[in-house]
Structures are given as C-alpha cells and as structure tokens.
Image (tube, rainbow, N blue to C red):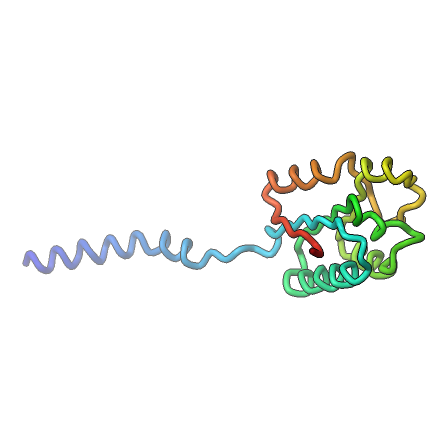
Length: 146
C-alpha cells in the first residue's frame, strides 16, 4: 500500500510539473528578438562588400532581425555618395529595414555634409555612444572588417 501511495504521489508531481518543464524545454529564441549593431571603421571596399554579404546572410537566416550599421572613423566612406561602391546594396538592405548611421563627430572632422551621404543613411551624434546604447539595450555587437 505504501508503494502505491508513493507511486501516486510521484505521478501527481510529474503531471503537475509537466507544463513547467515543457515550457522551459521548448523555448527557442523568437526571430523577432534578434537585434544586431554592426560597427564599421574600415574604409576598404572589400570589407564593405563582405559586410553587405554578411548582412544578407543574416536576413536570409533570420528575416526579422533588426540591424543597424554604425559607420565612423575610416568606415564613413561606406555611406558617402561619391565614395561608396555599395550604394545599390545599401538601398536594397534599407528597403529590408536595415538602418545605416553615420557618426556626426566623424563627419565634422572630415568636413562631410549631410548632403554628401547616401539618402538611405541617417546620422547619430556619436558612433561610439550609439553602439554603447544599443549594447545596453540588449543588442548583439559585431565589428565589421579587421
């Protein structure tokens, strides 16, 4: 009789706790949860080509990912109309929701005006502070190039 009571007790505990265990075990990240900030400080056009390919791969695997590319220092030419080799790709990625931000500090130091940037580019007061804010907001961080 004791064995029967213990069996009933164990079965009851397992039945009551099954929903808790199944919720924990089946939780997979929702693709809407992915947020990535990419820092670009490299002016090499080969790095720019690789960057747009990598962003495309991210969006292919996880289409709802939020992505912001922050360009400062040597990476600003990526967003400068007269210097970029990736204008068409940037336009296509912007249409998919990717944000492109130019650092106003770098723009001032290089004497770049807002009109010099691609129309798809926005600006942020400080590229570094934008990256810090994103990381504090739970965004993953990737440094493009080398």
